[in-house]
Length: 408
Image 1 (cartoon, helix red, strand yellow):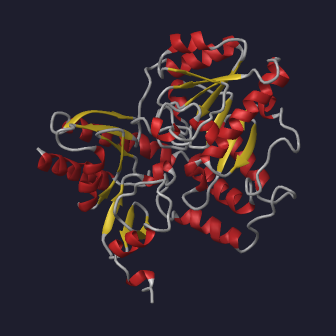
Image 2: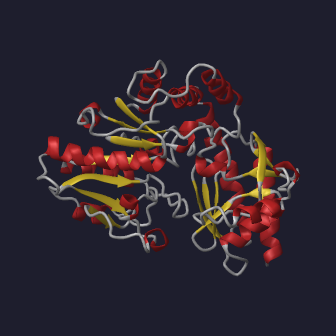
Image 3: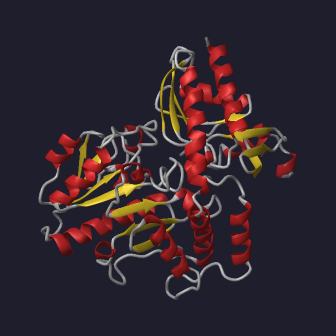
């Protein structure tokens, strides 16, 4: 007889996954069973400081009491109607999210990839109905090293071969230019261009932050060329960088904003396309949809997330603690760290390859009670919940220093 989960070790549970779970991820060898705030606990009772926060899905920490209360309250009333009917939670969610972002209309979806796919459809429809691009000729310009998801359409414009290899044929209609290169972007935009789709900060690529003026330049160029600026803020948005949105660091308002991850509070998948009325207004009934998008439970949790952000507390925390993070990382440069990029509570840290790969460093940190995740080569990402304390952050940096020192 199979032992109950609570009686099995991490090793038992990891081995149990092997024959039944598809290998679409390569998780660290830790089996999380409980969590609260910035801390998680494995099945054997070991505690870890979460310095990844679900790739920014847990900006408010694990089981934030305000969000849990909102979910419990809604669970006792109504969870799903489908969009075949109205529900009493959706309008408030949409109104408050639009106000928070400075835009007009909201298209609720579930996952980040769905938001990106929806944004692409909306941009193409706008190009045909409003801009006058000939049918099936619309193009979208994207940046190299992007990460917008893993659907077939999205990997069609990825430059990561591990995401593309074996999944063709690919969807046409995309032009790829170098990130942070306004001249290349200008050359790629023409009369067929529906939109420029970029991440204000490229997360999966290693938290790549563009030069000052790049985002403002994208905004000016798209306005001048008569195409849309779509900002994918699924990872960078909702307080992570010290502002509600990363584009706010350059006082930019895009035409279309893609949100997800933290919008669901770490409880349910919630994403959204938020845009100007004349853009989202191109959609008509039956042209796009989602059974679960905008469901009452998601709307209740999403509204509670917006309420937390309306106070400005989390944006201030990310900005203030971001100074602690930058200062601590600066002290590690030359001591195993070859460079880093940080904005708010988000950093990509390049480790000397002689010390180890990003995976190896992540595993060493895990053994010391710190959870992070690697990306390309010897780069690790730090993105703790915005509820982390300065003491916890300094402690994590101290453990990183120790691990790097042991690798020399």
